[in-house]
Image (cartoon, rainbow, N blue to C red; front, side, top):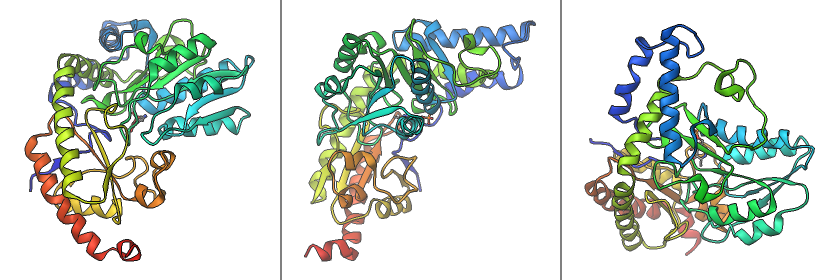
Length: 388
Ligand code: PLP
């Protein structure tokens, strides 16, 4: 059976072109970039080339980028780094209730250490209201962190507007752009952000490498102490093959980003329309228009998300319920609950995320298979019986 992978928001396969440029860095050009001999200096040169490419993708200067082990580390670095460096100015942080766990758990950690955090609510489409951000700013606010697009329900937040408010108030602004970089145009100046997190494995680069953009002049402390790598901002021997692969993935995405976003928006539309037409009592979660081109998230009444995922898997289709990171937990998604969905609807959610290798035939196959799965599950559902 041919597998259909529709979980690109969880991770993407690494492009063959990316793997190809990475390989020599494991065996031939393996030098430590801190070594003075040419082996080391060549590796250092490759890192700097990748840095220029990644910076260019987001409209930044290369010296404003620090490579990390991924999006999670970039989020931790941004939030803890700013919080601990600016403690004397204030201890208040503003974020949203739909952030990724990498942001929410970091904020909770800081709360246990005396920081105060405001978790802004969102509307039924998952949007943060910039006016709520404005109202939440107080004398002691040192940081605002609102994600660019949500990994579960795909809503794109009004980051540029929030950026304007943050700048007027003199408060640092961070955005988690792990789901947008490589998929839609991202420019740190247009978004008016001071810090931005990204991750290579979400756009056909390797796992275990990401970056934090830090606007020149932003006061933050390092979270990783040791050697003097990354201009003393992040100690540890660099992941040279990963960084080179990140650079290549950036180059590839830059060539295809608009065309691919358009193609995926069409496929997305087809999938949403088909699902809503063919399965009754189904709703689209997230904003209908301001959403990631590749994200479809629906709630299906009277059926558990987990049961749909397992049945889809038997048909060779990979999708997810909640986020990849929380789908092993029985708790319903905090994102869907924050948008006002009931526990039942949140439990009945299904996320399809499309990507480079998604075809129309694959979408048609989902539209053929899922209504049958839902009908079968509903026939057995105690939830449906209890609703008469
Ligand atoms: N932030 C968002 C919005 C994500 O979707 C993810 C991964 O799913 C992360 C952060 C974590 O990124 P990484 O897996 O590179 O640590």
